[in-house]
Image (tube, rainbow, N blue to C red):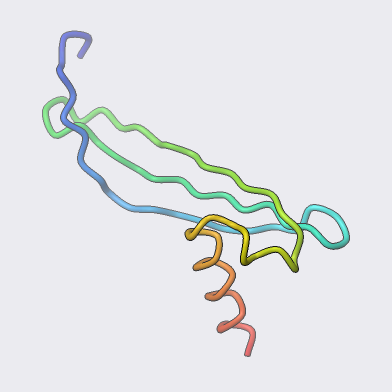
Length: 74
């Protein structure tokens, strides 16, 4: 609806990481929302690139993703 004054409601977040070279990773996060009035959907994407040893300097959502990856690998 073109005349809808959207009221966005959070649905869920999906995130993943993939290698981007020898010692670097690319991290992706997608927050999914929908309008409770017209049911339009929207996705807000966030990306971050960094070296493996610089995770301490990354945004919090990247640190959580990396900690989960380390836990799954043990």
